[in-house]
Figure 1 (cartoon, rainbow, N blue to C red):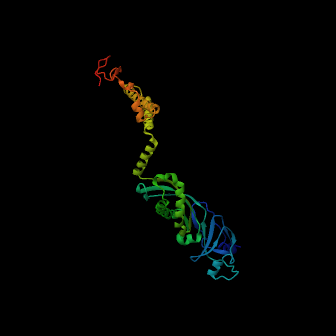
Figure 2: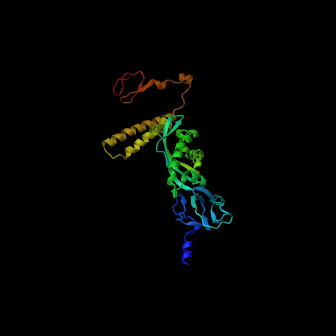
Figure 3: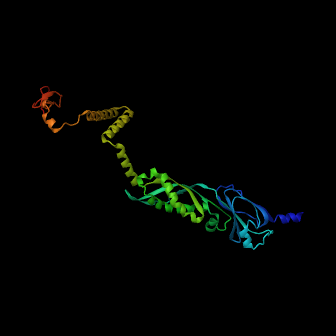
Length: 332
């Protein structure tokens, strides 16, 4: 009984991988030096692909499902090992499990500014960041081009290469999109979709598929941001007369919140006088009739032009008066 137990312990009859990490892309099944029994059970779960490797050569690929290993479902291994039909002896082979589920929320960012040619500001430097998601779309290609013969690989092992590829292609995507710098913030979604189509082919050669690419923020140079702020202020100002009224009202509000005192009272009176003048100008502008035609102005009565007011006491005087009859002030 002990001899049979020892012999049975030298063979593997169940092969499976339960991933509890969430970031492992490839895992090489640990045989522990044992051989695989012909007729062993191979379990491949959803979002997994199992690949047999014989002496460094990729062999059979198993999609999700449960398999009883035999020469019928291992045609490449059978050919490589020169097995006869119905071969039933244990064999040695490496089994790699490739994780094909979606790896979400991977961060990217521009360590150095990305150059962009803008029609209005010329050449400008942009900084941007966001996130992306990807998956292994071609497990065999991924094992050949990226993985090699390691025991396992995590997302961290490929993130660096993917980020450099995406950032290097972002400048081309920005240039080809032809979105002005002033409109970038309002077109993040459109630019993200365009960048996804442009950047996805760049990592297909690695057996990977870029599923999403999102731009969260694009930072413009300080000079461009200041220019945009000035233009925004001018657009907000709109009518300069209304803008002056708004500024005056804000000044009165701040003066009202200022603690009492001589300085505060003086400032309040000064602001009040300014506000009064602005409001009178606004009323006069709204109430004043449209200017009459030149001919009508020539025929208008001149009675209003025959009088003037003393600048000192305000007394109404004839236009030709040289001195005020009330205060005696010399008239201009």
